[in-house]
Amino acid sequence: MKKVLNSMVKLLSVFGFLLFFLGCGETDPTKLFAIQLEGNGNKFQQGQEVGVALKNKKEIEITDLQYSLDGETLPVTNGKIKLDAKTLGNKILVAKIGYGDQSIQIEKKIRLLAQSAPQVYTYEIINTYPHDQNAYTQGLEFHKGILYESTGKKGGSTVRKVNFETGEVSEKIEMDADVFGEGITLLNDQLYHLTWQKRLGYVYDANTLEKKKDFMYGKSREGWGLCNDGTKLYKSDGTEKIWFLDPETLEEMGYIETVTNKSIFNKANELEYVNGKIYANVYQKESMMIIDATTGAIEGVINFGGLKNKIRKGANWDEGNSVLNGVAYHQERGTFFVTGKNWDKLFEVQIRKKE
Image (cartoon, rainbow, N blue to C red; front, side, top):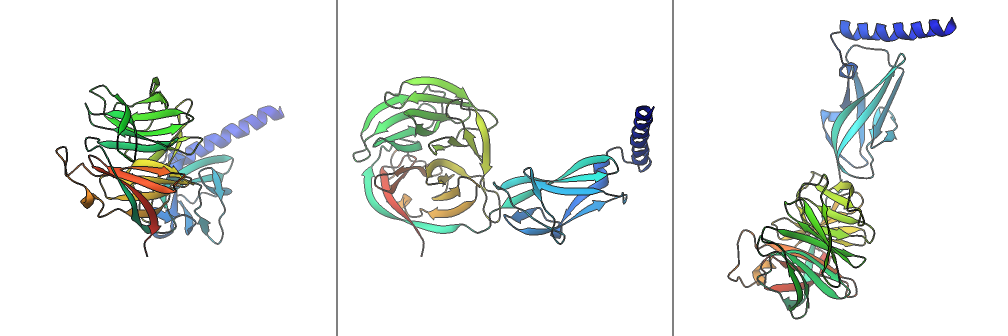
């Protein structure tokens, strides 16, 4: 009998709440509440303390209230929460609300930005080497002392091994005429290669350039740049996202979003990973970003202005597209190598903070 009575009480309780919502003109209980943040804004910086309140449209008695971000509870202290997360960018602030024997969740979209403005860097040219001016450079990386390069455009896409001191191409494979090649990276003697809009990538033997398999993209939009940290691949796709890929399955395991202290930025192109940072060409700009590979914070911007003026413009020169693109780090020399699309020079540079 007690079980029957308890069941009837619970049923009546639920029925009573439904009648209450219907009587209030609300069929969705989540519409009875709203998260209010200090200043009614939606852009905040990592670690910022922000005033928070719950708008209770029908003054329902609340028995429990918890806020969370990326699954981590945010304690409320003196009416404020500290917005802190492992990664930055577009986020959803969640409020879990308890009332009676009910519990619901409501959400608010926010943008979590970097704490500090990017530092400005410049460069010093150490050496200048010849570079194939027909190469519409998309990817650049050293592997066992050899410079690997990928080039783009339909009918001109290649993957090649290059003697960086002479510019001589020692080996080269050509893509089908309908392929627009993009970035490359090398890991465990495998060369990974992207295409732009075909949503298709390739894996080659790094030593022989023999193709081993194809792979399809997941949720990422396009193929732009590639790099790796020795464990996973990083892939830019023309948006604010840089995706993580499993090097064995090539599945996308997540992403970071690139942000400054003021906005989300979506121009990361060719990539290189060095000591926890991603160096990324800014699409169609004479600059490069230094991105924290864990959080997505843009910590620095390298101004390569003036480098393009040192190039001799050849027959394939396209003023709108023959821009800086291609960055490779030479670990033994401790220097970066940069070039551009249809540039006749490859520059070895030291990167330093601007004074």
